[in-house]
Amino acid sequence: ANLIRLALFLGTLLYAYAEAAVRLLLPARRKAVGGELVLLTGAGRGLGRATALEFARRQSRLVLWDVDTHGLRETAAECERLGATVHTFVVDCSKREEIYGAAEKVKKDIGDVSILVNNAGVITAADLLSTQDHQIEKMFEVNILAHIWTTRAFLPTMMDNNRGHIVTVASAAGHFVTSFMVAYCSSKFAAVGFHKALTEELSTLGKDGIKTTCLCPVFINTGFVKNPSTRLGRILEVDEVVKELMEGILTNKKMVFVPSNQRFALLLER
Image 1 (cartoon, rainbow, N blue to C red):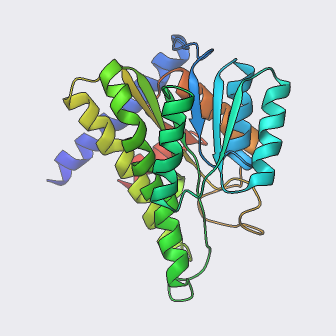
Image 2 (cartoon, rainbow, N blue to C red):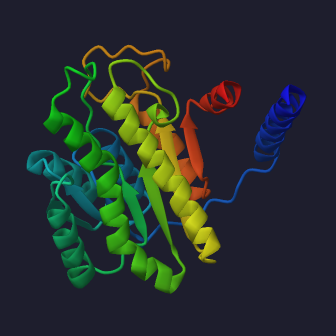
């Protein structure tokens, strides 16, 4: 049994290296996103704002959601300076009714969303017993349930057209655990599971025109956690993460690890 497990591990490792070599030698074709209607949640700051700007540079039409009115306005203004058409909605992604209500307005007044970026997220860093009940509920409401509600809202049209892209912003904490973030890690494991299960279901249904991408960075320097320190590795800057995310979206990559060596760490752990 041990020999079989070792053989499977070595086979997986060799496949990963072969895949990396092929990607290096034969760069994937990048799709055009100009004119696509892109909806981003959590667009008021950090990775959400940086991703919105990247789509704006590529002449996408933008629908930006955030609970922070001021941050949302700033992101919209920066995107408009780049020539993008921008629609903003103040939405609390912890509330299902607000998500469904805003989604109906988008579909009725703006059009069909073809790229959905579920980026909104919250984090509380504390040991499990010190984390308050409402903080635990909020992390699950925003970090995974919001993904499900937005996807249920916009997926039907994508299914009808067999065309679209659903992006799940998760975390390396959806694969590797760290102390003092039990609830957060649990919510991010759920987000990774959602992405994998949705990808499998779309394949089973023959909807190969709907692409999925899951982003799993180690912690990003966005100001959510003060002086972050973790065994997951160095703290990333927003610019390097959004670069990898956009590359993943444009090449229809299913799982994006930042830094990429997380993929090999995951193989070793398994």
